[in-house]
Amino acid sequence: MLTTLGLAAFVVYATARVFQQDHYWVGEYHYLTPFYSPCLAAQCVPEASLFGRIPVEFPPLVPYALLSLPILLLFRVTCYYYRKAYYRSIWQAPTACAVQEPHRTYTGETRPLMLGQNGHRYFFYLVVAITLINTWDMAVPFFHGTDGGFGVGLGNIIMFVNVLMLWAYTLGCHSCRHVMGGRLKSFGKHPVRYWLWSRISVLNSRHMLFGWLSIATLMTTDFYVSLMASGTITDLRLFN
Amino acid sequence: MTERTFRVWRGSGENGELTDYTVEVNEGEVVLDVLHRLQATQVPDLAVRWNCKAGKCGSCSVEINGMPRLSCMTRMSVFGPDETVTVTPMRTFPVVRDLVCDVSYNYEKAREIPAFTPDPKTSPGDFRMQQQDVERSQEFRKCIECFLCNNVCHVIRDHEENKEHFSGPRYLMRVAELEMHPEDTADRRQIAQDEFGMGYCNITKCCTEVCPEGIRITDNALIPLKERVADRKYDPLVWLGNTIGRRPKDTPIVPNTRRPAEEE
Ligand code: SF4
Ligand code: SF4
Ligand code: FES
Ligand code: FES
Image 1 (tube, chains in turn cyan, purple):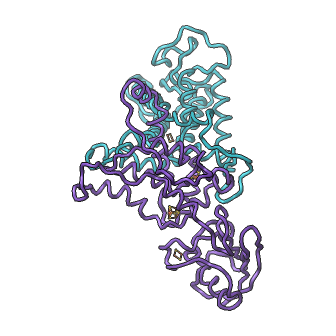
Image 2: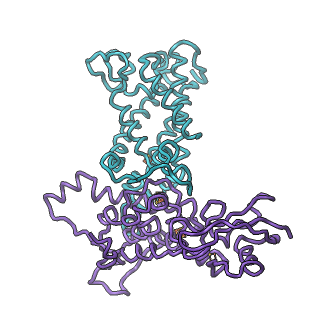
């Protein structure tokens, strides 16, 4: 129940924001919300598009971050944790452990439509690239303080925490654990990969926690940026 | 000493019903103690399976108030003061009588898995296993074969027809353990998906929730096995390599382990 509400809240908020095509950029401090990163449309504010723009005006309702959003969405949809969450809470297979499920037949992830779940690793690779972009987005505003140069505001801190959570979530991915060392038959022969695997395992065992935390920080970051961008509030500057 | 209502499943085969008993309960007792008192004082013919009373033999699996549990490890103090305690046999397996199930399904599934296959050129004294590798399979070795995980898994609990092609978390975990063994040379990834039904599991983790040994079945065995299956079957690069190059041999399931009716 809580899971359904949590997921629904995020989907509603994200949809509303993504299709709004506005309030995504704070020029003064170079804050860009993760929901519009990388900003690809021709109408993007030039400084906001750190990775170039496509020379096409996006019609209304087309997200400016056309490349990254579908990948991020599919990454989370095929995530082993979110799969568990929505199979249980939305699909009711099973509703809860030892509770009779309401389906007459069940084929799990063996049918063509569901086989796509096996492609989770490819979304993982792509999302690592996107998370690098988010990290860059987070770093840039540190060098755009009030008088130019280095500066820190509340926005920087929020973005930093967000990126931290994104990495904790992304690196704790089961596919990451697999490629880093899980796929090996012998740990003894590969000490470095064993070490990597054991680090990732620490994140992996808290994957659900970071899944939700990163959703929360994404929404917070976006909300804070949109409030500033729309002029509702101004950034709380801690240094310059 | 207090009195308690116990609602116990009585009967054999398909015919059975819940019967209420009022029975004495003392401090510190577990559900199995109370079942034994019932047997000693009221219903001498009550069939209960048990052995160690220490959570180590895996014999006493039942469902208590709807949750699969070991009756010897379920303390009476976990129930509310007036709560009725309902004890039923495991739902996924056929009932022999009262609380005793026929768990042969599990042994049949165990037999189908190709055993540890070391390189034929080595002999038993040759292996030197590193501690990290031992630890990995050690977790799965804690299993006491209580079959609570196979019992709770909705793939077969709610869908009898899936039993034929699904080995249950217990035996998918066994496949994973062998696949993670440094000296093993067989490749069970293809059959893990096609014969043992890895694809049926939707990683909803009920097996992990009920395991009395606290084995992280889903995270450490099932998901890693799914990833291995993806390496073998759903990775276009691997697929390309196999099509043009020499394909490593898939190990088939152990011959003659499926009953003739299931062979088709
Ligand atoms: S995680 Fe998979 S094997 Fe375990 S109970 Fe759920 S569906 Fe069954
Ligand atoms: S894995 Fe756990 S639940 Fe399953 S049979 Fe072994 S001890 Fe029992
Ligand atoms: S991101 Fe959750 S398992 Fe890969
Ligand atoms: S009697 Fe041995 S596990 Fe309960």
